[in-house]
Figure 1 (cartoon, one colour):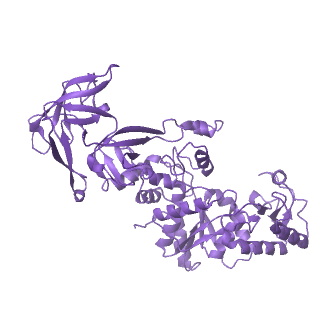
Figure 2 (cartoon, rainbow, N blue to C red; figure 1 turned 120 degrees about the vertical axis):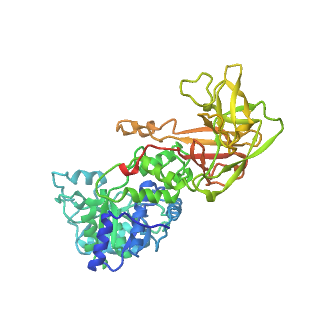
Figure 3 (tube, rainbow, N blue to C red; figure 1 turned 45 degrees about the vertical axis):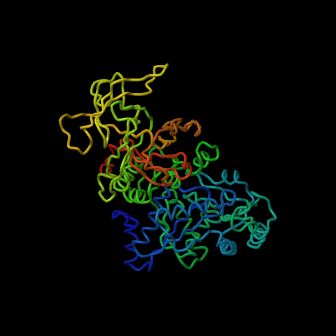
Length: 553
């Protein structure tokens, strides 16, 4: 697997300097997701950064689950995250869980209490917020801040023993209620939660907060570079405080980078879960979802996502990436890999009246004109074919070069045909075309007596394989930017349109996950969940072309 991070990566430069100066002997990173949902494209950037950074410097990367909130976490998410990381092309040195360290985290909290650096507080969450202060006003000390070490040790032990209900007490760090950094105003380290944990069961009823568990877990694992997104920059002093006051032997350092934001893409795990819970989408892997499993089902490749993550780079400045950049990289990846074939999404029957009845011939076509190694295939041709409804107009405008009464067009890989008659139903809808063909114009014959400006695709009718084609638009409309509009009211009603048509007969029995370029329509993936032996289902990955230029992005 190709594995090169961007040369302009400021974190990579930091790592190189740390190794050069001897601050670290071996780089160790980690990817630490919370198992409360499926990973999305934003997580892919962090995965690529952590794993490729360690690989570049011959270091190691752990996959560690931040499973400290049992109310929201589930084994399903643990398994899906492992699958996504492996699918992207990475493997971890060690699989760890924050829950592996619950006992040591508790012991370190006891150490903080003994040092007078932590206390049990009875204030409610609302009272703590009220007393926390503002950016311009200092906070107020909790009335429980002066409890003795002995009393705090007793109460904390009783919290662990399950004597108190949820919300009755918390363990807080004793730092500085007047600190200009609000994160240092006696943050909560432990809360009570009588909830079943996916790994430890009911062994614990108190759970550490992320800002406490995360730095200690990093230190236990010997992580050298703790890489996170910019919203944690203000938490770094607390990260350093926890490691120092808990007297950890290893001292990791935290570095922040700008998280990935993509146009027309929902990055909030809470909102994505809402879409799943409200059945707006077909699960976390719905092809419209920006989850890694959704992108995989839609047809994106790991190579395209890794290339996209490298191209956007690693920076400290907030920015929004055009979704067309991601589409550019899947086109680049598939243009030499995907078999090029023909599919009719909205079929219109054509009868070639002068073609011999009962005759079928096989025509030869390249599987990929840009990759000769993909070889050729044979396509049946007979008296009856399907073309796209959009490739015919009874009363066309000027410069319309496709099929209309009296006009001649080229059938891709086949012959010239001319429309002679239009058949309509009682409602006036065009249901069939009667055409003639010129047998001298067979593709590859060298015929050049006359030229035609239009070339259309087709599928032979008697052997055509029925298929559904899913065409996608952004799941959320632009109105989602309006803060006063409920999120679920911003769903795009046209986010998925299904059309029923046909593909070439050589597509019969293809496996889920196979990818094709359909002439003029774009790149499609065989849906791995919904395709059956009787009915293929294709997801459009991306349209054929885009005006997007990644070098100008």
